[in-house]
Image (cartoon, rainbow, N blue to C red; front, side, top):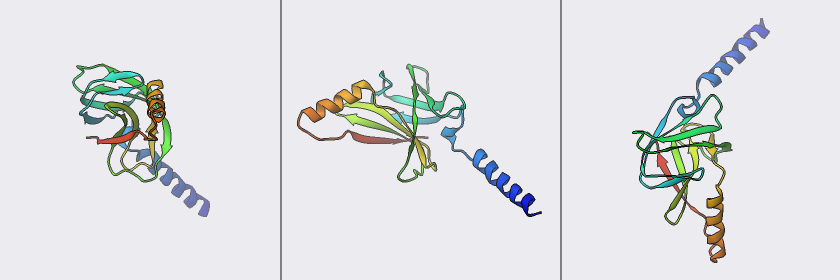
Length: 148
């Protein structure tokens, strides 16, 4: 009898863990943001505007960002899981900023302990290297935008 009870409790917890993922973790569910500046994703420059971010399929690694009105191009990109120091309350996208150049760097889902991190592009690594060679040890500024 105890084994059956333990199995039922374990199954209930597993079902909760599977059915309670956040919006960005679900395929086809879009998170939207108004991005007020041009930005670079995976080597592609996208203009300022309203964008949506969503998963490409059941796997969390592949994401796509496209303009809500379909007036602008889109970018498909791969991410890797990254443990958060603190759990964000709301969905966010994060950019690394070098001067007037913004690179999409993270997608955060509110209530989740993990985020999706993009690998820095060659252009981003070169800008960082140039900044360091100029005698400054400045790191890129981080700009977060809440999603709706």
